Length: 134
Image (cartoon, rainbow, N blue to C red; front, top):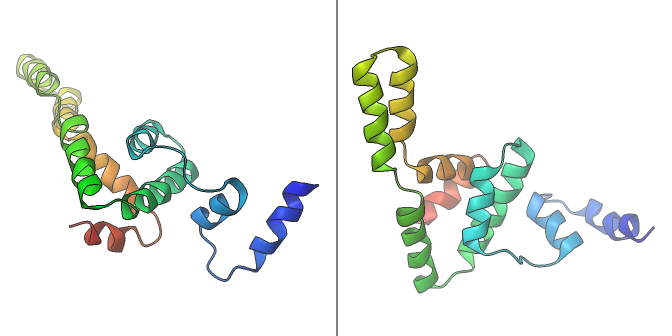
């Protein structure tokens, strides 16, 4: 059972994190930062979101200055609000001002990067690592 034989040494690690397990079992990161962010937004599981958040932070921390700037442009370009969706939600709210339509306006007005960063923040040490991105 090679899987369990490979896992046993990792059980002695004093600082157990998802990234340690992932590196031990699967090697280094193979996904792009862009694809990791897309997977994070599509993720609906708490554990998978934590693993993805750890992978995103690790990948970001390996970037040089140019790569980090490219990451922020990715957040700006791909995870901004959809102005057409906001306009449509506002028009629906104006024609029928109820709680459901107000909620739709609120959701449309939140940029995707806010949700992405909120999820990344949930990982252990996430806040500290996000603050270091500034």
